[in-house]
Image (cartoon, rainbow, N blue to C red):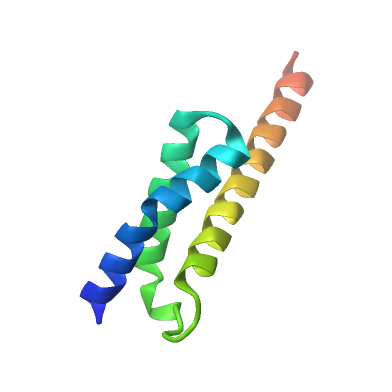
Length: 84
């Protein structure tokens, strides 16, 4: 079962990278997002429900990571403004 999950994630890597690039328009950030998505997916593999769409689950993880990154950057820029 775990090997099937791993193989399915590997097959989706090109799609994940394209989606990440469409969000951020930066290849380095896109690679970071895909790596973070894989890390989170493998650490939370037990919460994935077999029979549901793995691609949708992974895309949701990636999108949430992107939103978290945007929020972090926004908060950091607001902190910089306060410190100046």
